[in-house]
Length: 349
Length: 291
Image 1: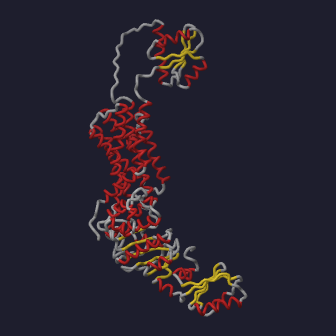
Image 2: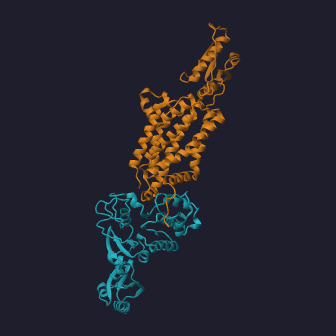
Image 3: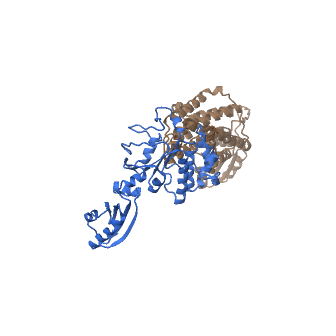
């Protein structure tokens, strides 16, 4: 016998999304495991230990070489090795040493590449040690205060960026592929033949993304705090609200990208076209401020730049949401516009 | 491109109506126009007293059950989950387990769609159409590609729905399917209806009840064959002859005598009751399957 409605279509659609995702092992890997591995790898590669010693090659020639090496080695910041002319040149080329010192009679010759920052620093350091060793005295007294501020390390900069980038990736790939596969398998057409509300279908993607977002962001933050002592300085509530907004925004963009294509190849190309500029420009691995001034209005308007900026301000500086209203407004705009346009141009068959 | 042109059909409430025709005849386009999935350039379509785009399309969809020709439901979701999803789209409808029972998928209730056989998937597709307890059920080539066993079990489901008072519009390119399930059949070719009636009426319209198919060693004079008693129609194709005859007892001895007369010999000879396939052949000169 016909009976009353059982559960809400939005609930069933969202549950279906979640089931489909969790039963796809590869997807789970790329969304949860991969970002953690990436945080680990980059965190290790750029970890802030005591500054590395500067490697210096002394070109072998006469007895002065060994003498110079021992003089330089007195400095705690220098590792000096004596190498033949050939070896030294090779070591400089490959970046193993920052500078070559060649003792010639009573003077020294420095060989280095001035375009390499570490070589310029090495030149100053080596020169200072050698001059002092040869009797130069300081003219004025100076004092030093060394500051290592938490939240200012590279890994602290990196984690919010990785979270942002990951949210973009999983939003676009996750949604884009699922929608296009459903279209190519005529599932969308089948849904269009039911009284299902079309907005419910699109909203179910956003809601299911939300569920995974919490896990996805938590995985990276928890890992980074355990492995690298990463701390969130701002309020957790602000971070949560921002990630929700970011998740919705990239789901909306994902839907927009998937609104028309009928093949996986088609949607992949489109997604790369959209994501590539943001990978490069939006300041995931280094600050987007480094790009020329003329590009800045464009860069700041990108959703990933906006998300990364808000996340960094909240996590690293402990800023408040209200002081970041501009990037938040940018995200909100992207979110609403992409969802509305996606709903409008969406092709069901 | 025009896939369907000048189609004028009426499906009565409570009947099973079949669109029979070869691939590319325009059956799917016709059905999708009726389902409100493809807009028609011209003409009017009225479904259960409503028109697409004129009133409340969603309310109309509540009353329809649809199985599309090529839908592949999501692989990772189970049978019961799929049906719950489809059930949630409708205000009223059947209990999910009731429908699972109707299509005999109880054993596969918690199996993923990807693990089902072709026949089981097709029964699930029909179950998704039945879960809303529709007044009108659209089935687009429901048994294409299924083995005979799977086809029979799908026919059972359709007959049960029909016995419960439901209306069905079915497309097929299997004439056995059309003659077994349908009260009335429209034969389509190149986007047009070329014959319409009950399967019995259509076969009767051949003016014959038997078909004699044969091949011979030496080609025969066709006009002599056509003049044979009780022969109403001759069709020749690649050296195979097909005679439509009204009385087999009269036509067959005369045919044998004629073959001998023309100094030819029989290689093969079969006779069978006329079917919808023969109707199609006599109307188009082509076989349904290779049209």
